[in-house]
Image (tube, rainbow, N blue to C red; front, side):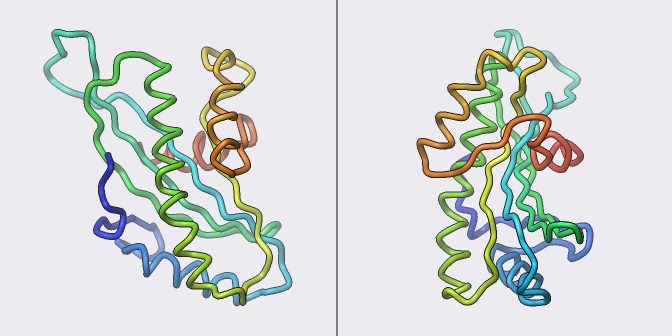
Length: 175
């Protein structure tokens, strides 16, 4: 899971397989098309249990983990890119949610400084958000404070369901 993001290829329905530098350039071009618009740069991760013919004897499961990065021009659509990885030995829902959140934080910590450096101060204003797959309804409601605390403690703005569309819709679509 701690792969060097510089060496992996993200997917895009529009642009195909792209490396980090290509994603940054694509987002930069998108921002420059309409510099007066408002933008959100959003990172979110979701996972689903991997379908396997054999069940683990120790009660663990493997998951497909998808991290998505989106640039959204408010009111006018956007672009997104995703990376799917397999993570073994997930024991329970809490571990799954922590794994998803850490994947988003690890990617954001890597990506955001590169993105800002590449823009060199010449970009439209954008909001930066980390979308986490927890919400007031369902089994994750008791984890909201700690997961949001993890994200904000790392200096990012956290969004939960139903506002966490990067995790609960975009990344989920590709798990």
